[in-house]
Structure formats: structure tokens, C-alpha cells
Image 1 (tube, rainbow, N blue to C red):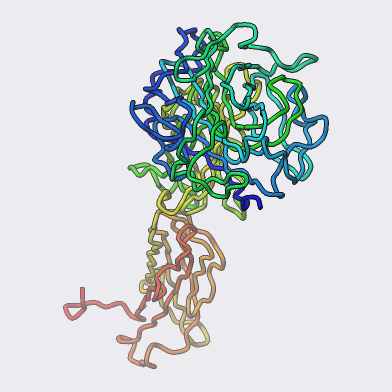
Image 2 (spheres, rainbow, N blue to C red):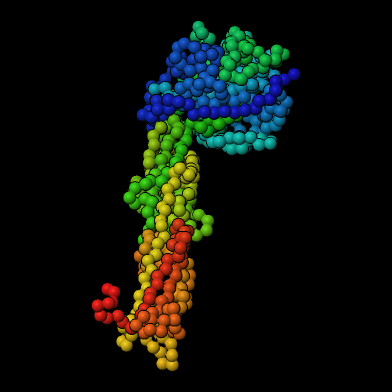
Length: 574
């Protein structure tokens, strides 16, 4: 029986990233290389148990561990049943591009069957030092292994892999000879071309030695590895470990556990530290770069990255209705954070300004000062560089008919100065707690008065043939900061004066000398001194931004009462 499948990959962003904010790994400055074997950083001691001194161990990096002090950590649980993803075909070799590697579902030889794989990155005196390891299902025979650190995101397909090599990918190969210590370490850099692997360091050419604790290191101390020569406890954070023929066990049998480390910065000789995205542990027929590949465990290992946010800024000018009364001016703070281990370059942002419907939006960057508006999905450069762990706040100002404006922003950056295109990106859509809206109150002032004229000082005069002509002046003013749409003005005697109109903020429309014919005075009054004529005007409309009707629940109105005869004498009301 083989172990039940787990097939899981986990990476984490671990605490204390602030340790490297001022230590820019990608500055290109050549530093004295930090030795890989440093127990105060990581316990390279042939077991996974965290113990004195203060350095991390795999017990902390595993899924149920506390996380340790790594900048990034990944822990992969690989299936050891017949549904394991394994290499397939003769093209699966390190000297060929990933697109030529084959993969299938199957079962590798027991001695090559990976059960767990892990990696963790650290800043050690300005150097990027990566530790890595794996444990096997069986120790029945020799087994070599390799560890790839890819700059591109690499995944699997039904018959192979997605993604390709990038110049700067790093490969570490080593041996795992039953009954012996580690004695071979090779470190390669992918450069492409006819001879795609450049040897950076090797125990074959540069020598190495094993110390009293069983740790084998290159002479330059920039790469080291060790196996467990004796049974070692499986940490509880592992989630279990199964060994061939024994089932679930509490200890790694001798030579089942392997770990190593490499100082990437030192081996690259001061060139820019690469931004890795994926990690792969694999078993192979030998430590040679031309060896046939067997099993693999693949997971995300993003050492470079950015994050972006977006939130409304509330001040005297934001959010604020524009003078057109239909659009809103809003400021947004867009924090961009470098979440990786090295400086990123040529940062830009893109606003999603293509909103559906009529909510047209235009945006521009106001801080830092950037010329030109942001077109739909058009990148606007905002920063030349951003150091590891640093955050820069970008202020963007937008004008939109949306209230509130909810859209997305995308930040992009280059992982290295030499990168042709911005290869890092992050997006954020404003949430409910990150937006702000205006709340205008649509209002209208309606005025109606009698329209005096020659021969009709009260606005009312007798008509030849009978009846009365009553004339009034009407004015309607938009007394709000938003435009009013679908405005209708109707007089109960004159009829419709305006239908479906628009009033901008503060706009007044007037209708002077609007006359109608009345047959009788109010209440059929026949006394000329008391006869009066009343009519009413009603106004309706909807706020262009608020969508609220004016005068809700009662429509705005005004009434004018015009008398037939002017009042005079002491009895007249003022």
C-alpha cells in the first residue's frame, strides 16, 4: 500500500520582512558573501526540528508552523500514490527548456518518490540565501536530486508544463548516496542558447569538505547540504510522514531527509539578484545536468512582488460635485508596496476607466506630478524604483458620473532594471469601505406672481365679448448643487411650459406674461372689488446624481392670486 495522496502546495509571506527594507538585494553591489552554514539564520543540521541556537528550521516553515523569520517560505506535499505527477519522456532534462519537458500521472521508483519539498529565503547581510530540502518515500538505493528556482511562473498541464525558462533561473544539483554523506553540489544559471546552463560553482571544480556535523560545503561556503545519517523526528507541523513498508512513522529513517542552502547573491558575483516566482524539487538519475528527471514537487515561491490598494480621500475638494452638476470629482490614495526581497523598477498604474453605461470616467495622477490623463487601461509611469518593503502613496483624481466611483487599479513594475517589460503586477478593486459618495439634496424654488401691464395693473382685465384675461410671471430655479433632469413645469390653467428639460445648478428659467382666459372669478365671486383669479404651477424633476425626485413627497408648487380691481384706501392689506 502507498500513502494516500495529499498533493498540496503552500507558500507564505513570513514575518519580519522589515529586516531587509534597508538592505536592497538588487542594488548590484558586490558584498562579501555570507556563508550558508550559519545556525543563527537556519539550522542546516540534518533534521527538521527547531532547536537552539536561534536560527529557523523546517518545523517552522511547514504549514502548521509559526512561520519563522524567512522572507518567503514554501512547503509542498507531493502525492506518493499512483496519481502522482511525475516527469515523462526522454526530453525531460535540465538542459532543455521547460516547454520540452513531459509530465504524466504515474508512480516513480520508490527511491525517487518525493513526499515533501520545501524552500525558504533569507536576507543575510544583504545576500539572498535560499535553503531547500525534501524527504523521500523510500531509501532503497542511491538518488540524486535537483532544485530549480524559476523567475517565471511555472505550472503543470495534462502532458507537460506551462511556462518557460528565463535567463537567470538557478539550478542546484546534489547526490544522495545510501550509506554516505553528501559529496556533490553543483550550481547552474540558465543562460539559454546551445549551452543553456552556466556553471556557477561545483564541488568537482572548486572542491568542498564535510565538517564534523556531517555538513558538506563548497570551499567558498556559498553552497552546503546534509542528509540525516540517523533517524530524526518528523515535526508535528509536517502533517504526517509515510515510509515504504512501515506506513505512518514518527521519524525520518536514515538518508530519507535532505536539506541544503545556497548564497544566490554571492554566486552571481554582485549581479542583480533575480526575482524568483516558482520552486521545483526533483529527483533524477544523477547529479549531472543531463540526467533523466524522475519525480517533482512544484510550488509558488514569489521572491519579488508588489501589492496595490485604493481608497477615497475625503477633504474639502473630494468628493465634490463638479460645476456641470452631473459628475463628481474624487481623489484616491493608491498605495503601492514592494512585497519582495529586492528593489523593483519603472512602476506604473492603470485605472479601469471603461465603466458600463453612461458613467464615463477620466482620471489623472496628481502626485507625483505626471503629465497627461489616464486613458482606458493605459499605463502611466509613477515611480522610477521602489525599495524592498517600501510603500509609496500615489494620488489619483477622477471625474465620473458614478456615485460612488467603484473601479479597479492595476500597478505594474519591472523586477530588474534590465527587464524589457513590466513583469510584476497587482490589482485592486475598491471595496465598500474604500469609496465615498456625495449625497446632494435636489431642490427647486418656484415663484409665481401676477403680471401687471398697461390697462391691467393687477394682471387681470376684461375681455371683449366676455370673460377675463389673467396674466402671470413664472420662474423656476434649481437651488441644488446637482443638475436636475426630466424637469417638467405645468400650470393648471396654462398647461405644460416645459417637458423633460434639464436645469443646471443655480439655473433659472422664466416664463413672463403667460396668460389664460377665465370665465369666472374664484368662487364665482361677482363683486368686482372682491373678484380674484388663482392658478397654480407644479414642477417635477430628478437629481442627476442622487436620482431622487425634487420635492419628495410633495411636488414644488406656487400659486398666484390676481385681483380684478386694485385695492386702495386704508382698508387694503399691505
